Amino acid sequence: MQEFNALLELLAMLIKEPRTGLLATLLVIASISDYRTYQIPNWLTVSGIIFGLIYSMLVPFSISHGFLWALGGLLVGFFILLPLYALGVMGAGDVKLMAMVGAFLGVTDTLHAVLFSFIAGGLAALVFAVFNKALLRMLVNVKSAAQLMMMSAIGGFKPDIQIEASKSVGKLPYGICISLGTVAYVVAKQLGYA
Image 1 (cartoon, helix red, strand yellow):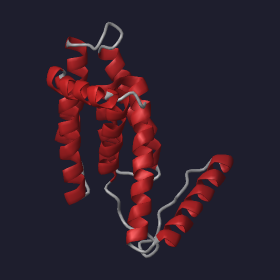
Image 2 (cartoon, helix red, strand yellow):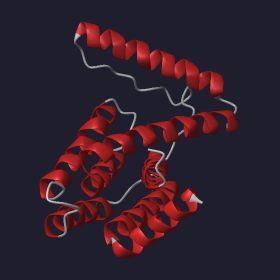
Image 3 (cartoon, helix red, strand yellow):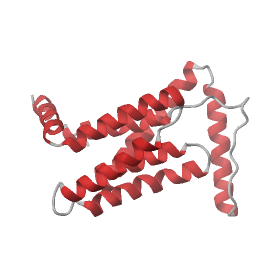
């Protein structure tokens, strides 16, 4: 019964608070685009970032959850995924999408959304590798990338972890994982599980 009431509160929040409903809509559009083209359009992420910042300034959740709260979330989302882009394991659209999520959620919730997104991405990668009968190849690639990153951290050089096309397991539209992880976190938080 408590979960049902929390779910009703979530639905009411979507109606009363357009920020959450718009975030979910933008995430669905980003997922569809990433699935179809392996790209997340700039108009989507930039307009989402602008809306999140301006809306948080005009209609803050509370006195402490205004513009700076949204800006902090944007920066956290951006800078957590930026190293993965620099290493070539994630696209720029994914980084901008997480920054957009941050503008809607603030610092603390963005950290949780990133964690949920990483979990969703890991599970999706496993399913993708098993479905394509490439689990062993994926594990070897992960091991090689981790070793190279560790050696570069110790030696102080930029790692080059580009995987040969013949050894790659395939391309995963990570925007879908960001979307699933973010929505899962928002719902889990509303239901009291996160």
